[in-house]
Amino acid sequence: MKTSHPFLIVFILAVVVRGFLNFSIPLVPGLGGGYNLVQIRSVLENGHLALPDMPLLFYLNAWIVKVILFLFPGAGQEQLIIIVSKIIDTIGFPLLLYPLFRIYKDIVKGNYPSLFLLAVAAFAVLSYAPLDLACDAQKNSLGLTFMTFFTLFFLKFLKYRGLKDLTLALAMVILIALTHFGVFCIILCFLVLALLFFYRWKAVLPIAGAVVAGILLVAVFDPGRALAMVTFWQEAFSIFISPRLLYYPFGVFNFVFSFLLAWSIIRVVRRQKELIQDDDRNILLVLMWFIVLLAFPFYGFEYGRRLGLMLFIPQALALLFLYPCFSRQTGRILTYAVLALVAFTVSIRLIHPKSMAITGESYTDMKLIRNEIDDPERTIIFARHGLEWWVAWELRVKIAATHIEVDDSLRQKYDQVFFLVQKKGENLIYPGRTSVFEKPVPPENSVLVYESEYFNLFALHEDSEYHP
Image 1 (cartoon, rainbow, N blue to C red):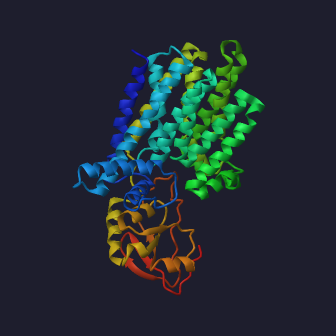
Image 2 (tube, one colour; image 1 turned 120 degrees about the vertical axis):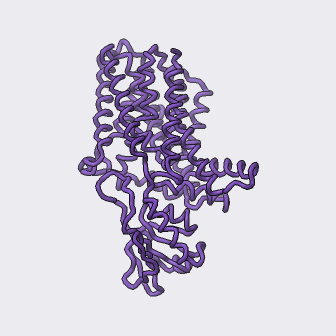
Image 3 (spheres, helix red, strand yellow; image 1 turned 60 degrees about the vertical axis):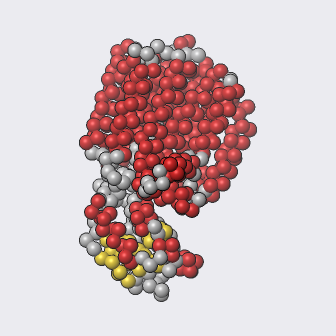
């Protein structure tokens, strides 16, 4: 079997699995299922995003929808937005297998068993984290695809010093910055680690320039996120390991597997120095510290959860670089263990596909709220996370999170201010036994204007005050 065949087989499987997950329901599964749709529609109808964010994915979707509408004017715009969004998520993420294959072929230059390559490829696109990112986390998924391309080009530059590879790596950094804020931040961390290990003190000025340029680039599209790049430490860390991990077995697995890989790298670097070239040794050390950085156990739960969902890329790379250092028996055990893990996660996800943030019955009921809305453009509705995007998609109103305060400027901007409280029909997607997302609390003298089995809709009275 050619070395590319395991990657091709897994690519086809990944497209089939992600296609099933995406098209298992008419709308988009996941907590953020409606978010991408709202942003894409805003680009098509208004020429800009509805909310500040990294724009690339939304404009790509909008451009494709626009081309299809030009060719087939009778097609329904909103249905096309959903279909195109699902297709891009289905195909876009598995493409990271190509740079992963090129890393094996051009940098590792190994002669590994096909079954091990199949296991690593499957781990990269069909293990828990990749499948958890399917459907609604499209920006994250596409960002990780670009991240794998960046890793290919940057590692080739570090090893062979080719200017073309450096140029392509920088291009990938820009694409990542335009796609997903979180992936961009961890790529900057990877870049800092790699430059320090390969160039030592000579890297200080390039590192400072890269960080400043990155913050400025993000600020162009979302000043709030740019500010978060320098203030994240104020809320990112926790003194204790989050007790919520008890309800999140994947987080526990991620800690254990990550630190086993880190220990293996330390052991290999110390005991097998003569078998490892200097560049490969530095790459292993960069991967080790990158894995430790992402798997650090004392982040707040949400920070740790999000960073943990991106660990599979450096974990897969570490497996590729470490394999020659394992005994034949260890390599065989590792191969079967990874394949068993992938088979388990795929089976669980196919048996229990990701659902929407609300049930179909409550979604149908929510649409009736439009009868209470006089002018969607002059209406804002407060709703919990996971519900708000579908409110915006279906009712075409502005939305607000529970922490937003109703002040004079907001009153002047909107004729109707509503608070949507969901009583039942919420699908628990976030880890844990209960929802962590706060529901809006209407002011005491607000008016109940809609009541059903699933929702209460309160209207803000002119004299009411709302201070979350």
